[in-house]
Each structure stands twice: as structure tokens, then as C-alpha cells.
Length: 312
Image (tube, rainbow, N blue to C red):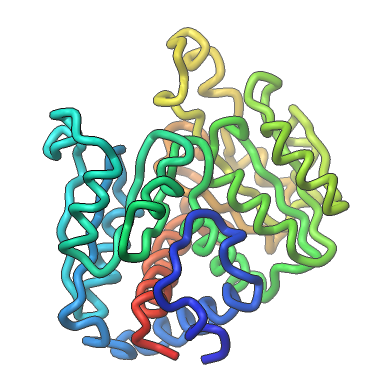
């Protein structure tokens, strides 16, 4: 498949590490796997994935582990840094060197920005960033883009709204930068003033002449959106509990707010959700966040197979 051979032995630290053509090839492979789940079965037999999660995760860790198992491979690792030698003071560099001596590929989540890039410099095997603090989450971006493409049939020329914690939301940062490479994209960033998008991302968007605007009111933007990307206010990123409590329920998506949205708009969320999407929305045909989670497994299967070189 076009471009997939180029991904062999490559690390993925941020979305820009892959070209648009390479991402589109991953999406095509993921769609092929979705249609035939036996495709590529046992292609990674004998290969080992190390999952190093220094921060809590459900969907990302389980989807990577499920992806590797469905490809016929195996995994090892930890989901709690307290159960690793990091709790004894071991450096990240030493942990990575150790894991690379056991595994063929490493997936890592770490609360420190830049940790994934550091890990890739000490690893003898590819490193996949599963989230480094508030910086990037590139495989969630692949998941998001695949979901948009599958449900709306395209990515170009859409209006995408991001709502909630845009300051610390690494999924927002990664997706906004990835979307900026598509044609005629408009982005609407909806957040309280305390949680606005970081300046460096806005500067990058301006340099690329991306059409975007910032708002505090969700309802005003709803009628124009093709995609609404909801995020939770992340308690773990706050130093002050009072600030978290004050801001956590700023935006709650409910049926009343959805009434002004397009009939074919889709609602995405990287999950977990807390209060920001009412459970009544789950039965709305436009709610796509659980489909999004499943697409995440398919695109991670495509990614692992490509980086390990079992497809070409």
C-alpha cells in the first residue's frame, strides 16, 4: 500500500511526523481491517509491544493492547508507574533502554511534556507517543481524523468546533495542528478565558492562514459546526482545586443545545467524559464518541503493522 513502507521503524511523537499521504494510507489500511477483521491476523506473530503508562489510561492502553493481540503479537508493560522502577528513582532514559531491549516497539504515556521525544532519543526501537502531558496525543488524532472521514466522507472544507479545556487538552492541540494541513478548514475554539488555546498553536495556525475564531459561548456556534469536539476539564492538570471546581461544568452538552445543530453534525470526545456530555445525548444519532473509540483500535492496528513493517 502506498507510503506504508515508509513508516517502517519510524517513531510517532507528534502528528506532523507523518505526511498527509502517509496518514491517508493508514486510514485506508484501517478501513480495510474494519471491513475484514481477519486481515493481517497473525501478521505480528512473535512481535512484542511494550506499553509504558506513567499516567492513567483506559481506551488508549487497551486499544493498543487489543490491536497488538488482534495482529497476533503480545504485549508487556505497566499501567501504574508505582509498579515500575520509576518509583525507585529510575530515569526515563534507563526505563526506555530497558524496555527497548525486550520489545520491538514502545507505546508510552507520560505526564511530562517532551517526554516522548526524549524517549525516542534513547530507544533502539520505534516509540509511539500515547500522550505527553498537555503537549500531543498523535494516535488520538489519527483516531479523530479517521472517525471524521468515515462518518462525514471527507476532512477538507469542514467547520470543526473544539469545546472545553483547550489550554491543557493535548488531544485538541494535536488535532488542531493536524487539521491545519487540510484544505478550507475552519476551526472554532470555545472555552472560558482561563482555558484558551495556547498562543504557540494559534501562532502556527496564523502562519498557515487557517481560518479560526475564539468564543466563550457554545450555543452561538452550534448551527455552523460539522464536528463538535467536546473535552473534559482535566482535574489532573490543575494546581488549584478551587479553579477546577469553578470551571469544570462551564459547558454541558444536552438535548437543548443539540437542537440548533446540523442534522449530520457529529459529536466527538476523546473520553473519558465527566459531566460535559449529558447521557441523554448517547441516543442521538450524531453522538459518535463510542464509534470513535472503536476506530481507535483499527487505526492503531494499522499503525503497529506499518511501523513493524509487516505491510508494504
